[in-house]
Every structure is written in structure tokens, then in C-alpha cells.
Image (tube, rainbow, N blue to C red):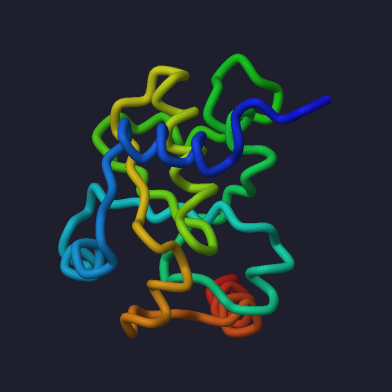
Length: 143
């Protein structure tokens, strides 16, 4: 079966319909904007290998639609706060563009993504934490 619409076309269509922020836009809001929720949609293997943005919520791309839908048995209430802006990122910005478009199609209006994804995040010197450091922080907070 031939592919009639390739991934590049899908990403381009999504990019035309979603809010896209630069890394600098988001860096300026870090720690200043309580409405900002960074959402890392990469696979856990990517997080384990590369770390994640400091303060980011991990919501794997494969579960995202299920986590945001209150009718889903996998629903996560963290996504129900309409006063927040959920800014998604992936490795390069392609998956997050598609995911942002999907969430918009589901009815979310408070969603955007980061141009260039985690690769751009790291290149711009934005704060990153390793999963080992994150685990240690969480363990210390439990004590």
C-alpha cells in the first residue's frame, strides 16, 4: 500500500495550525510564569539517555491522548487545569507538532510546542536534568 501523505506533509500541516514557541520564549518564562507546564512527550529511553528539561512533566507520546481525556481509564487530572498552558516538546519538534495538533483536535486550546524540541533546548543551554538526578531529588523529597 503506497503512502499518499508523508510525515513531512503531516508535520507541515500541524505546524501551520499550532502555536510554536522558540526555546528562548520558554526560557524567559521558566520560573516566572506559573501557567507554564512543560510536557516532555519523548520515549522513556530518550529521557534515560539524554535527560529532560528541568521541571518538565513526562507524558509519553503513545499515551498522551489517553492521559488528557477524562473519559479514558488512563486520564491524568494534571491536564485538566484550563488556566495552564501545556507546552509540549519531543526530540526535534516533529512529534510535538503532531501531538499539539491532535490535542487541539480533541478540544484543548491551551497547548503549544517548542520549535526544534529537546535538541534545540540543549543547544540553547536551557536547563536539563538527568533522570538519575531527578530520581535523587524525588527520593530526597520523600524523606
